Image (cartoon, rainbow, N blue to C red; front, side, top):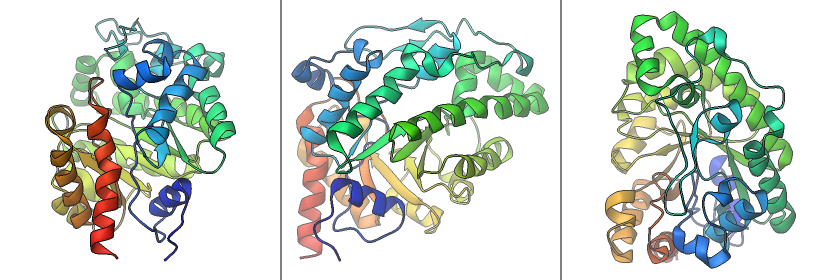
Length: 343
């Protein structure tokens, strides 16, 4: 086994099922914190609106924390902003959000992609930040972009309650909405690939506390299979919450990896996917990374590694006040476990 892989080689090998020298520390969503914002003078919301600041802040995940990947898309709202959603940009210590009480569309017939979509400031922030990172790091570190899936986009443009009620009242219309919205997922994903993204996170928030595994199979499994064909880089599906009930379906999509929540036991999750898809995760955010110490973080990392999880990182975008020592404990724990179990 090669013992001198670059961070990018390590991540791409893991995504493609090839040998690695150690399990990669991967951040499919992001690991930005207020402390890191201050360190490189790249605060929110400006870092979500300016490609140079986005690149500078995201690079700290590798240069300061030791992760094998860099993810410059911090939030889940860039596309929605470009589509015209009502935005609340917040301040440094809060995530920008979509004001979903004011949806912009009510039906599938309303869905239209603006002609200048890819030229919008909040879209170019991501594509141009990827170009900057590619120029700075070349092929040494894996650059992971992110494009929202149609279910997530539907929450933003229709409102969560309106959209979920529609899945019951008019499932055929729901499917029409998803079919149209997936075009946005592909368009933005292609633009990031063209900019130099090595892989893409594909968040599609059909979360366990909102919809069932049956809903995933009915509305999303086929679309996710299509995304694998449409976007020619490894895709990392991200869904929050308890998702054991849909992992079998997810494992059949052809996506390279599934980024899973700490609500799912690593051993049970590995059994559920049965080797058909790689797992990424699933270090707890609110209890462990935010509130505990590095030793507690390491214990969760060790559990993932013992279970055979192929890539380890936080379960989702970390709380902005997370201590960087706790984030640094993730790659440190991987190194410790590797030295103990392999050498």
